[in-house]
Length: 437
Image (cartoon, rainbow, N blue to C red; front, side):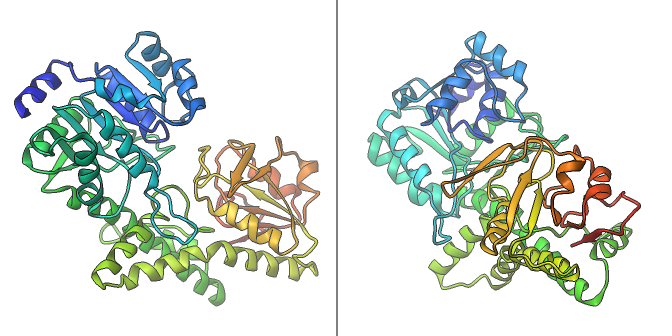
């Protein structure tokens, strides 16, 4: 099986299936097809399937012309019908792995997708899980589901591996194509074959590890590292505010050291699919072993309370001008979880808005990339434009995303007060009405 698959990879005879056509899956499907592999994208959302088949792009990291050309040439198509799994040789599972209402891992999408795959899994197929999850998922959950549902045996009839996605929406340098990959398979042959498939598609290095569990833990380490360091900076930011010290200036000074220091920045909380969620997956799994990840859990607590802390700071700013939160009008600038993208998954800005509204604030938002968002079943429409007249109508402007396309000079000239949680207006010389987190 190993030699057969390696030969098919070399000859571009592999048919690729990508399960989930979101921020991870669609860019991967496009790169597979561009590399000469016929690709089928699977998704339960008909809207996404229809858009792909019409050559219409909805993901920022995908080039519109690439998608249109691949669909027109027949190299890429999408479907809701999982029976087409029987026609593919390589399957990448790229479905969401959020937290449930109790902050516990919700791997229902992974489980359901695996059950659907197993019904149509054929011999000599490579299955790779890319969705971020807790260490052990591939071997403890995916492997038995595939074997039971297909009647095939892992390692003998099909290969199974884990290769964590490393998508960073809006990154101008690293995309799916050139970001290094980590691959850990169930057995050395599975690792080698899965790695060969990625090497045939990507420019980035492919690093092989000894097992799926190592690859799963590696992904958790990447994002927990960032979570902990951001948590430390957020806590010091709160302390610096009490001491009358600018944390932003402290960070700039620390950056002057050429070794032993990497800059992390404070903000209203953490957003995106990975950094706010991965530590919860690890701490949940650790409890199975009677182990408490105290440092990780402390950083999570700090980061989780930042939206509420920012609302408290906003209230203090208003109080100085003899205004109360209750009944005030606040304009929130930016609901995307990071600058210059249209992704608001787990965005702390949405949590800030929720806390403000609970305090009786009349809140509007403006985001040049997002006109409307839906969170927990509640939709909120944003302003479609922003003008000096609009800005003057608010008691406070809160900058919660540092979009580079926003005219912060205009904002400063017309706002009564500004609370800048991202230091986005750092280049504005007149600081008389600006307070920074």
